[in-house]
Amino acid sequence: MVDKKLERRGLGRGLSALMADVGAGPQATEDAPRRADLLVPIELIEPNPDQPRRDFPQDALDELAASIREKGVIQPLIVRDNPRKSGSYEIVAGERRWRAAQLAQLHDLPVVVREVSDAELLELAIIENIQRADLNAVEEAMGYRQLMDRFGHTQEKLAEALSKSRSHIANLLRLLNLPEPVLGWLREGKLTAGHARALVSTADPTALAREVISGGLSVRETERLAMAPKQKKGQGSRSRHTEKDADTRVLEQDLSANLGMKVVIDHKGHDGGSLSISYKTLEQLDELCQILSQVR
Image (cartoon, rainbow, N blue to C red; front, side, top):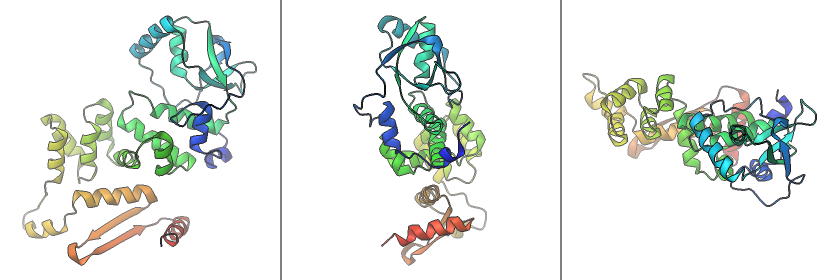
């Protein structure tokens, strides 16, 4: 189990530094490993029991195993000394290669041994998971949310370390506000991330999602459907004035995601408007005051 003190401290070395140290991302450097590369018997290597990824599609493993039979394991696994079993190793990054190597009946695997704490191990497992090619939008968004909630990373830090735009991360995080049925359809591929983004700011995303799926609507058609005014009888002119446009609703959600507090924008056109921020605790109020005091 991850030590709570380690878990709450964030990453002392910094996210980019840790990724570079184990070669887990675009910031990887030529730093020499703590030990020379080793060839380790495959039976002495164990997976991380807290690995967030549970699904390893068999067809993809078979394809990788065929490549390993032909070319060997090109990229060494990153491992650490196994804290539960002396003389063995625990995978930090590369469990898919380890599984495929077993299918290819390899006896030894190339590894690089690193000194990694329990908290860093969990963090790297999440990072490796969100860099998968077959990741769906919900899994990617949940990975970002875990990194922010458990380790205190900001959207800006994640964007820099993972070579993503901040808007890409913010847009994915907004998808987590959708109802579970819609998220389920997104996981299953019945909706794309583009469809889901159009549904986030609607009053009834589930009903609209059903309409999108049954009608086979494109993303552009879904956007038009989401922006269509929903007027009640006798409220025609009033609704046009009070209905928030999609950009305002998206801005509210973006600010709410960044601050971790509910933000409401009341825009009155040429007359200006107001922005209100709701906090739940005194700690949040103190944090908000600190943020505002830095704005000059």
